[in-house]
Length: 116
Image (cartoon, rainbow, N blue to C red; front, top):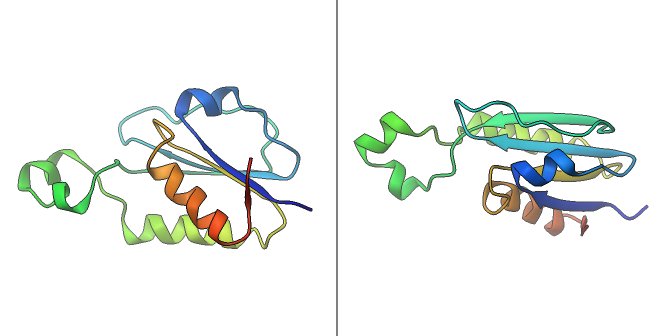
């Protein structure tokens, strides 16, 4: 079976109907509601952290406002995707569908999934 991946914004993932045998990695901003998704996902992982670079996050004011991805967040995403054992389509979403979800998608493409 050809395995697909793709990334979506919060608005797009709310409307996306997943193909059969699909998983979702959903990354959203802290202090916002968990994004809504269509039914039909085999499993979903919801993780919350901001889209900030370590350069920007290094300032003291940014550390009080933004929550950067922790090593545990990254490990959880890794285990969820690798645990799929090449049996599922895996899609990712974040607020804009540009950065955090694209990083997950890029990892999957480099490991054998095809763009949806």
